[in-house]
Amino acid sequence: MTRVLIVDDEPAIVRLVRDYLERARFDVSTAANGEDALRLFTRERPDLVILDLTLPLMDGLDVAREMRRAGDVPIIMLTARTEESDRVAGLELGADDYVTKPFSAREIVARVRAVLRRAQTAAIRDDIVRVGGSIVLDVPRMEVQVDGRDAVLTATEFQLLLHMARQPGRVFTRAQLLDSVHGVAVESYERAIDAHVKNIRRKIEKDPRSPHHLQTVFGVGYRLVDGEA
Image (cartoon, rainbow, N blue to C red; front, side):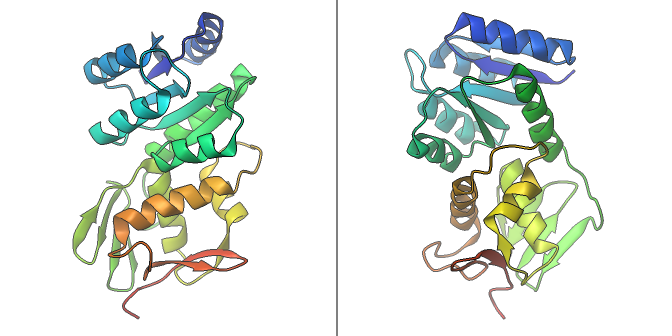
């Protein structure tokens, strides 16, 4: 059974989300502060984490940072913070999605399923996708090599890179890339794509400030090319 860890200090929210997830046949654990969350995370190794940004004892962004250091478990941020900078900060730490309070519990379940589908994806067409002689994606294993070195991407980062790698050289708008990684209808938040692209560049580019592979097309979006071409 798929295990989800909910981290939030509001009991009513925890009960609501837990009940809906359990009805959807998820195995659910809960934590009310950041320190307990990290202990549970280490002990239980959940398949997905729903993480509030505002927590006692340890800030949610710090919790996300520690979880990211331990692996690439999918993270959905659950937050009452409305500032765009908070959401971008979470996404830049590697969160896969975010939901702003107040929210629909049904939406949470749909987001969890969508993020897990991305994390558990297998090959749709080719098992191996190449971009020139530089980038190799092993789709079933969700592994990436760039110029002969490994790049460890989160599930969402991998799906974005794969989406572009299947059509190298094509320019994708932010809205198109957002649609490629969201399995449910959500409010378009195109700055999320910029945050994910920044993360991908940090992992695949020799100099992320002067990218050879994942290029910006100003006023339009992004494209992936063979940087040696």
